[in-house]
Length: 112
Image 1 (spheres, rainbow, N blue to C red):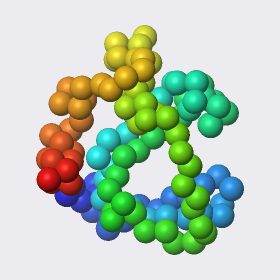
Image 2 (image 1 turned 90 degrees about the vertical axis):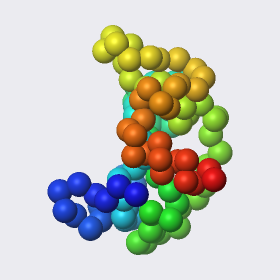
Image 3 (image 1 turned 180 degrees about the vertical axis):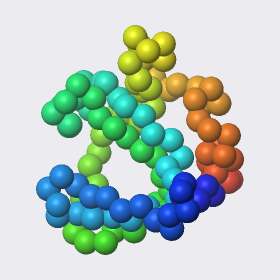
Image 4 (image 1 turned 180 degrees about the horizontal axis):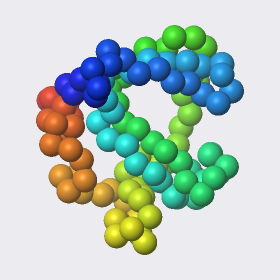
């Protein structure tokens, strides 16, 4: 797995409500902005930032996160603003084209 950049052993973050805090021990497999209507509703913005990471690379430091069911395409759809020349739309984008090679390897190991 990819260790965190800049020599850090972990990254910490949390929800805006400050009730949930977490620690990442590895860099996410992939991160992107999604501009779908669902993400706009959920974030209250024109886009949502999403990061994909293995569950064993995340530790909850405090709070009790509640799973939320979202449409499948939330994590597989808009990969950026089309004005920047990146694909946008519903459906699955080509991982081989957009994911870093190391992340593709991590995914391959996870999927067996």
